[in-house]
Length: 166
Image 1 (cartoon, rainbow, N blue to C red):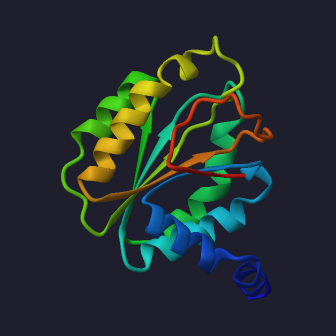
Image 2: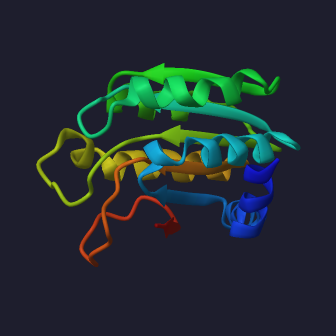
């Protein structure tokens, strides 16, 4: 109960409000140390929405399997959450484009990438991914991109969402 109270004081409700108001948000941070907060954030989203989680299965920047194993107990407690793994950026983009109308639904994409490394394969597809995310938003999905790679902003990164939170 202490974790839930501290998260409410730290702004979990405000984060959910900002995400729902903006509709397309990227949250960047060292999520490997804050899996509890991410699990509670997903639970808060799932209170009134169907949540579709898509995990980009690359361990280039973060040990995603270990990260997911920590997150899975939170997801297993929720009935209206679906989890899908995609192993390539192209498959991730196609998956997003194949989604139907999502009124009252949230699309959470766990997509570890470092925007500052221009030659990385993930970054060469960011413009296509952004277009797919904008299309999902037009179809009624609330879109949250969770980037578990901690990196401070510098004004020259590729824009993926309307709002980027660090």
